[in-house]
Length: 125
Image (tube, rainbow, N blue to C red; front, top):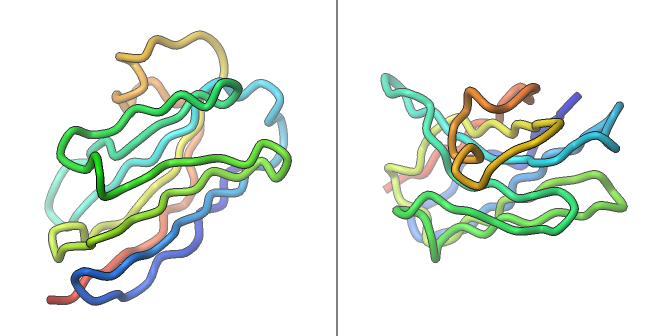
C-alpha cells in the first residue's frame, strides 16, 4: 500500500514536499514514481527513482524544479517541488513497481503495479 501526503495550497513561486509512505511487501519494490493529473488532462509522468540504487529520471519539463528522493529505512518516497507555477496544480499520485524494469519504462504509468490515493496540490497565482 502507498499513502501520499503533503499536498495543499501554495502561492506561485513557493515550495512543497510530498511524501509517499509504503507499507506491506516493500522488499519487492524495484521502482517508485510520481505522476500527476490536472483537471481535464491525462495523467503525466513527473519523476521516478529506482528503489535500491536511487537512480532518478525526470520529466524534461520539470527537471531543475522538482527533486525526487527516498528514505529506504522509512520506506518513504519524497517529491520536493520548488518554484511552483499555477500549471503545476494537479492531483499527485505515487506509484510502485515490483520486478524487472527499464529506465524507459519508468516514465510509463502502465508499468506500475500499485498506486497511492493521490494528494492535491493547488498553486495560486
